Amino acid sequence: EEYRVVKEQLEEAVEESKSLARQVLQKESTLNDTLNENSRQKDLLSDLERSKGNLERQCKEFSLRILDLEANTRNDGSRGTSRMHERLQEMTAQLEREIRDREDAVQAARKNERNLREIQFQLAEREKQKRISDEEILKIETKMKRMKDKLETMVSFSYPKSLYTEFKLIMSSIV
Image (cartoon, rainbow, N blue to C red; front, side, top):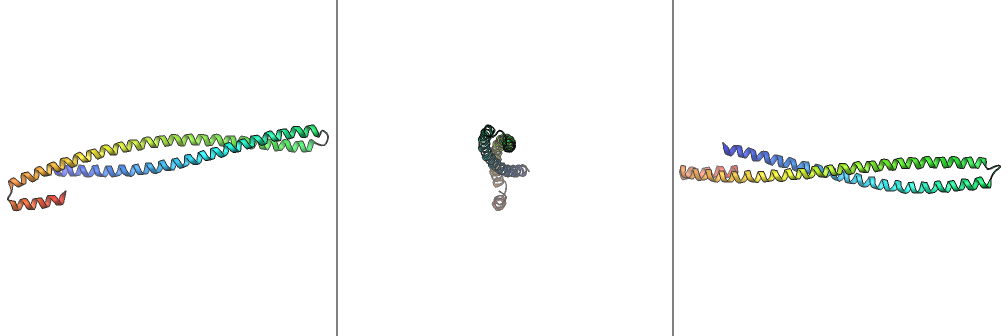
């Protein structure tokens, strides 16, 4: 009876260990996905920063052009100046959009980093639980072996040799 209980405990511990191993694999997959997403966010952030620099430079160039055009054309330059002024406003709006996009990308990268840290923590916890389960399984297996040996010893003294041989065959098929 005690042997059956120990065997059931061992089977439960083995199933739990397998379950934990599957969960660890799932967490590793999620971790890899998060790392890839984080890398993509960093690349996007770098591209946005380059675009911002280019747009700021263009804005300055357009501002200088406007000043030059205003100085050179006083009478019929109003139409050209207004077009340049509109273009400057468009570029300014584009720059503002790029800045907002960059801030969103930075925020998403920070969120991904937080998720990554949480997943790493969970993975460490799962590995710790698996290690503890493996130790428990080893203890149960050792206890089962001692019980089996004890049972064999008791049977060998209590029954005739032919029954003892049959008992050993049955025990070897069980464990």
